[in-house]
Length: 298
Image (cartoon, rainbow, N blue to C red; front, side, top):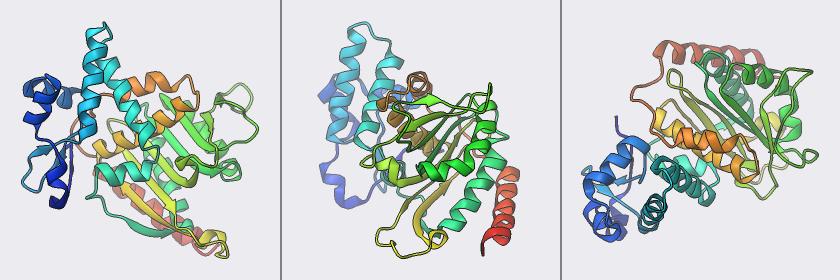
């Protein structure tokens, strides 16, 4: 499986070969390849011919990891922190997937279709995956309210679950459930946060990975709510799903969610190879058709 993103030839001149990265950082090519295979760091871009290329910022990132390792920090911890730093620079799931995986198709979808997709993903992936890490971006608190019961159920069967929205009365990330049943970690986002303007449902799991992310196209103030258009990405590529999950976990950590730090360390590793179970993918698509047929005109 290809675990790196491809780049257009026109930007090739500004990139570094793995040999140049090794020379600039003092880390051998073999070690850089081992880090990439084990931890997904540093993340190379691919030329059309398949050769690795790196950004100038990768030099500084590798240098930081080396300095922290030499100071006694465990390598996996140093790399996890470096990956978290990357998410601070690109705190948008949609932008991260477009940057790291430009081959993923983009679709313009109405909100009613995104709702159907989200419900199908929650039913066929999030609820059935083996102890998944779940992330949901709802934009506004009022959008999370009708999904609250569903996400409280999902939180019970997941390793960790995070819901992001403009939660104005929380003050800080916290777990809020019904009665004695814990729910997901609710992460309040300020309006200027990129993720506060996005739609996302992400299930990072070995058996059933999936990521849906979308951003609302501007200039739709007079458009009926369910007819609003979003540019959307849907993928079951486990590497792309892992990148989306890392971005969300980084945003949660920056917002002060204590549960995010161990999740980020866990997400530092690359996912196992393979793809989502095709039977589950087919079931999800069937649910989408059912939901669209039932609620599309509502």
